[in-house]
Image 1 (tube, one colour):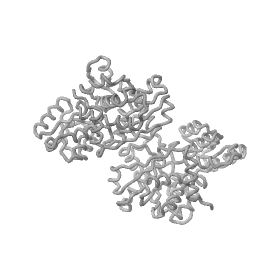
Image 2 (cartoon, chains in turn orange, yellow):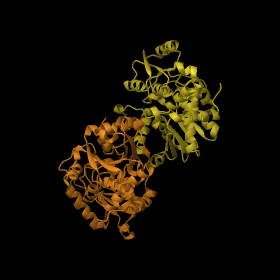
Image 3 (cartoon, chains in turn brown, red):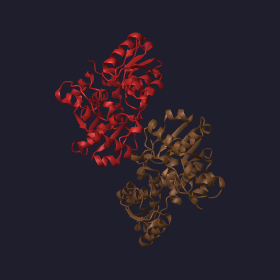
Image 4 (cartoon, one colour):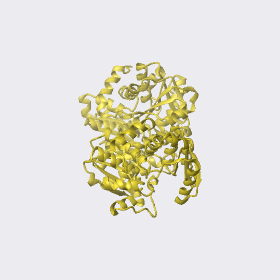
Length: 314
Length: 314
């Protein structure tokens, strides 16, 4: 496995810079007081398409050869990766084909269409998504860009931690949420290269805790069912991310849905920021294990801000 | 009337700098596209106590003589000025006495107590507020710091536009909401000093449109009743602010509650920022009169972010 090196990640950052925001690192003295430690929030809720996913998708698209570009890109996704890939393709001036389950939220479909992506609907099963995608790739010759189990995507997501450590090098811990594992693996790799003294710790919902179980078991144990408000973290861990996580992640901490909602509310109230439930998971996990972080400097990635405002949990 | 000069406002800025945030100016390409002009949002929702009010209160408190400080400060308010004054007093290490109507929201009382302010409850009428305040001042010798009809407060609020123009000097228009008029008067003064080519335009809710009526009539016509979601703008215009507004404000534009809610939702969705209804009023007014701003560069003050998350209007 040819993992991205530090210079690969730096090159990725230069490559995608014209197409992404350099998001700010914000702090809150009120939340620091509650947490008993010093927190630095990397605001990927401000990122293009409202989530860090813009990074990995842009990197994967911009690394395609001219021949590959001619036929466009394809993926299956009902979430932020769909919009991120459609946008990256649109910026590159190439077609994108997005297989979406028929029950995907209208707002997600609208976002993909808004970026000029072509939506191909299928039955809402993983099986249907995969066979439909195969048929699309067969028909169009498009390159499949998976949401997380893909080195160029992991390399792109790693640029988020690169910016965080540039702005705030003096950290004891960096936290990120874990779903498929692309963001966490990218974060862990980058932190390992830049400063292996810094611990990388993940937050995961108890209602979709396959990364937690896999991490402790030493092999991937997928979710058989999921039940959490953190809808961005329902996917099971990918193989490539897991290999990195096993090596470079210190621990995975769980948070219950009430803890996630409480952390999300805290960020809305005290920081005046809109974050999605998935983005609140690391803070929720930290607040549930405060003593472990007492007095430390902790960087936390707010992974995204795409929440249905009509259905806020408070 | 000895209006603050530019150097007074610059001195105020230096005076309060240790006690306030320098808030960022943020942009949104999505909202620019909708508005058909280029918008620069001064994010006072990130300000201490969640609103620009922290500026005026800090300035007024820091300008007190040592003799005055010894007896503390007092005001009557059920809103952001109450918390802002209690905080400014706490930072200065002096007592604060806040007269609040008995029906003031628990969360506002909690904020005042959290800053060490002493709350004196009274009947929820203006009459009761004023006589209770008089008694408190009589008893304690505290200095009354009014929320907007007070030069040191206006001088403090003017520092918000000072920062905006430092960060983004190249503007055609600056917009602020108007309630009592402290922020608008400070903004208009500062812009007049820095660059009189820039138009200052206010946004006001149709359901509390006394500034609009007073501006066009040439004399103060208070609200007899109010009905708007923009709870920070219910107060009638103050005399000192009105004198400045008549001279240096170009126009006052109205926005209906549905327009205010729509603008607020846009900011939550596209900018991932929590703002209170009052803070959304200028953007709502601009979107209701788009043609007037076509192609222009407009600075807009997001005046605050203190909204009851359990009662969001969407």
